[in-house]
Length: 138
Image (cartoon, rainbow, N blue to C red; front, side, top):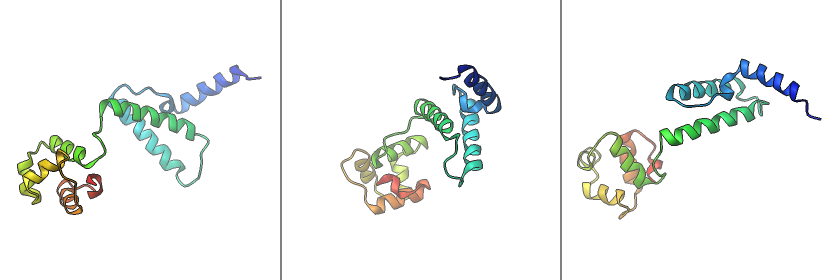
């Protein structure tokens, strides 16, 4: 039979020792705290194989991912969406990117609007300009 009194006592003790495992994430400050805690946890147990607290770390990671999905939405994972997102974040015009990357502005427009596929050369040039892995555009 389950001993809820013992479970309650153990939960209160654990949540007092590591409240970050059980915290709600409602702000960027709480997100930073939870992320720092999770990095610290990963660093402490890395290389030791499965850890008994991994399920709690997984729950915290799910909370972090849920908060980030709402507050820091990512564009689609394909090249056109990534290029449009990066242009918007700078902010940078296609013309300025064309001059800096050596890719014609018309080609950049075609890439964003899915009228043309990315080549390895496009990805390399854009990766160099944005200082990211070229693979995100392919």
